[in-house]
Amino acid sequence: MIKLNLDGCDAFVAEKEYGPWIDRALNAYDTLAGGTGKGSEMLGWKTLPTATPETLIKECEQVKALWAGKGVNLVITIGIGGSYLGARCAIEALSHSFLPKKDAPKVVFAGNNLSEEYLAELLDIAKLSNVAVIVISKSGTTTEPAVAFRILKEFLEAEYGKKEAADRIVAITDAKKGALKTLSGQEGYRTFVVPDDVGGRFSVLTPVGLLPIAVAGYDIRALLKGAASMQKTLSAKSADNIAVRYAAMRNALNSTTGRNIEILVSYNPKFQYFGEWWKQLYGESEGKDGKGIYPASVNYTTDLHSMGQFIQDGTRAMFETVIGIEESRRTVTIGNDPQNLDQLNYIAGKRVEHCNAMALLGTKLAHIDGGVPQIGLSIDHICEESLGELFYFFEFACGISAYVLGVNPFDQPGVEAYKKNMFALLKKPGYEKESEEILKRL
Ligand code: PA5
Figure 1 (cartoon, rainbow, N blue to C red):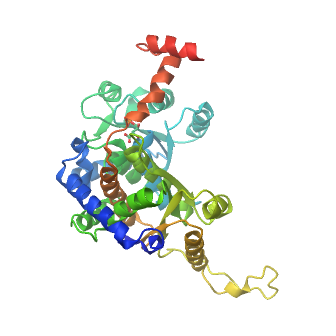
Figure 2: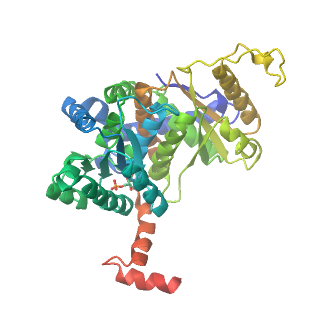
Figure 3: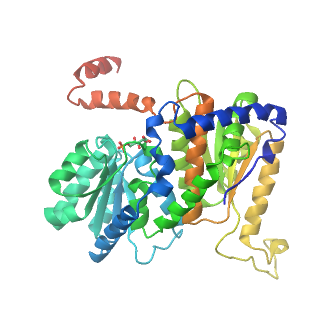
């Protein structure tokens, strides 16, 4: 179970300053729990852990089995933003750092950028593999995944024929509308639905996350079980509720100490994409109306040798939220070397994870001394259940925190601005006026 430790904030936010933020977070809790706030039509994610039917889990497993029967060894998951980050984060956290998983295909991601080289190189590996595709777009009209899908659909049809290609494509999209929904109906693709009341960045526990994670060979029942236990934990409104305390402290740090950058820190490279998922969740949910805490992420001890200097000693604008992992599930012990030329015999017999834990503690003290407040979170070990807990915890806390900040956590109006300009520059039909205006500016 996730533990929260706020002692690293004691030197920055006094108890009497923190109290009013707890009150505000408890009010925001009521808004979120009661569905009375802005964007409350998008609260479907709150009950996903306990409301996901067994039939949906079985359908995900059927796709895995169908493709295993065809010998598929490469699954390309197409999607951008909330339509890929959750799956990518879970798969990277659960995977071996170097070896492929036995009895499961390699899952790679596309449609999250417009790089031609990336797609060309993806086709290089696709040509050497037995391929299937999961295409995910709630709106069904997002440019990046649409471009990647057009190219990969053409590849699959050329490689396997139109009928077999249709068996190797699964679409996850809106129940009723959008280009992807129409195309899937016409081509006979198997489809899964992104519920209307769940936004992209809150969708990891819908088929958007569940299907790629299941196909990659991981246990989505355990993921949902972990999320369900966190749903239960957070259902009690109280000043001890860890989502209330986390949301209250990050807002207190922002408002009373001017720390408006939050850095999510992990000490395990497998958590790099967890940072990416978390940044989107908090960035798109809170960064609006001229407000928000800017979400950043680092991976220690790696980034102590790149960003450590700035964090210790640069502009005092940030606080850290550290995800500690209490047990490593693998053991590597540092040996004794009679020559001791590297002078490491003082840690001979110790596990590498012990050194990592001491780095965490030492960094915590150094950063606090340097003026960086620290929120501590910890999980027992990396597994499906603990990831489920973390997903649900951060989503729920995000809803509370955004309401404390006074913004709608569930919209993203700012994402449209670049699209309008890009469509005008690409001369998309319907954008003639914008095209004329933008060309004058260049
Ligand atoms: O969180 C969000 O809403 C966004 O990041 C979307 O997930 C992203 O823009 C992709 O949208 P869509 O699934 O409609 O293609």
